[in-house]
Image (tube, rainbow, N blue to C red):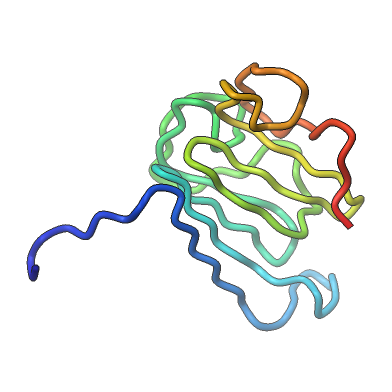
Amino acid sequence: MLGQEHQRPAREQLHHRHPGAGGGLGPHRRGEIRLGDDHSCARKTDGTEWCWGKNTNGQLGDNSTTQRNTPVQVTGLAAAKGMGAGGSHTCSFLDDETTKCWGLNSSGGLGDNSTTQRLVPTTVSSFTCP
């Protein structure tokens, strides 16, 4: 109905790719945006990732649980090829074919063989992304 706020289903993903490349990284490098339940993240064409929004479980990856109303750079990621956002966690795969995740881990969803919440990107155990 007109005037009512639209409620987005949980874990809905928005994937937006920008044409071209930046930073001399070649034509395969594109930016993208992913949405979690209450946070958003973007990968720039230079391979850095930036997140903003609710950060209760460290899903922004900035080594804090502070809500951010403007984008903050994810700690320790500079060569990301792609990313995904869940309800309260975020994952990225890197140029070296490793996968890193951070945020809520109560069910082991970060893949690091634990249920420990992670405030910064943590390597997914025994997994590479081709």
